[in-house]
Amino acid sequence: MKLSELVPYKNNPRKNKSAVKSVSESIRQTGYNNPIIVDENKVILAGHTRRLSLMKRGEDEVQVLQVLGLSETAKKKFRLLDNKVGEYASWDYVALTNELAALDFEGLDLDWGLDWKGNMDSGEEKKKKEKPEYVCPECGHHFRA
Amino acid sequence: MELVRVQLDTLRPYQNNPRYNDDAIDAVEESIEQVGYISPIIVDESFQILAGHSRWKSLHELGEDEIDVIIVDGLTDEQKRKFRLLDNKTAEIASWDLGKLQEELDNLDFEGYDFWSAELEKMADKIVAEKPKPKVIVCPMCGKVVSGLVDMDKFDE
Image (cartoon, rainbow over all chains, first blue to last red; front, side, top):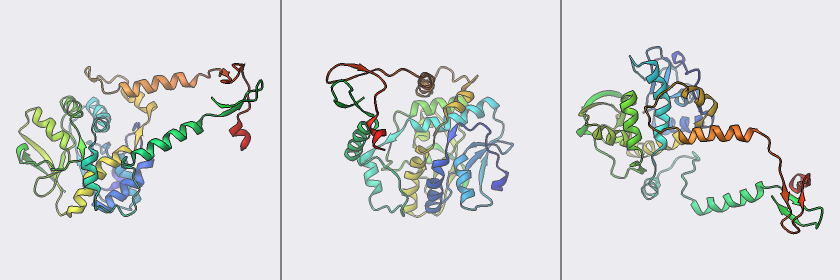
C-alpha cells in the first residue's frame, strides 16, 4: 500500500513524536518487520509511529496488515489495548544484559535502565534542586521548601 | 514478510527472551478475548519468536490450536537480537495523551477488567493540580510562618 494512503486515526491518544527518531533508526538497522495494521478504510489501528518513521525515511510503498470486519467498538478498544497490554511486561535485566553484550546500536541512544545506582543518585539530586530555596525574614535561615 | 497460518505448537520461544511477561499474560488474554487476536506474532524462518512471547503464552492458555503469524525471512542473527530488544524498547518512548485517552474511554466497556486505573488516577490528579493552592511555608529554624519569600534560585538567575 502507498504510505500516503494510510489514514491516521483522528483521536490517536498517544504522544509519539519523541519516538519517531528511535523507530526510524530501528527500521534502518533491523528492517520493517512489524507491519502497520489498518482497517477496511485504511485507517490505522496500530502503527502511527511507524507511519511517521517510514515517512521520515522517505519510503513510498509499505506492506500493511489489513483487518476486515471489526466493529467500531472493537477497533477503539484494540487501539487502546494494543498499547496498554505491552506495559504489563517488564525487562529481565539479567537476560537483557546478556542480550546487549556485543550488540552495536550504531549510536542509537536508548536508556536501557541498567545504570541503576547512577540513576538513583542523579534522581535524588534533581529532586533537591527542584525545590526553591528561601531565606527566613525572621532569623535569616536558608532552606528549601 | 508474509502472513501464514500455523499450528501454535510449531512456534518456538527465544531461549533468552529478556522480557519478564508473567504479569502480562492475564491482560493479553483478556484483550484477545474482548477484541480478538489482531496483531500477529512475528517469527523468523525457523518459527522462533521475534515478537509476541506474551501472545504465544496467552493463546496457549486460551486453548488455541492454529493461528496466523508473520514470518520474516532473511534477517541476520544480530538483526534478530536487535529487533527483539528494539521492538519492546521503542514502544516505551511514546506515552498517553490523557485528554484524548479520556475521550476514547468514554462509552467503552472493558467488561470489568481493570486496564486503566493508573491513567484514570492521573486524570483525577491533573484536575486537582490545576486548582491553585496557597503555599504556606514554615521556617524550619525559628518556626515562623511566612509567605511571599524570595525564591533564592530565581534570585540567582
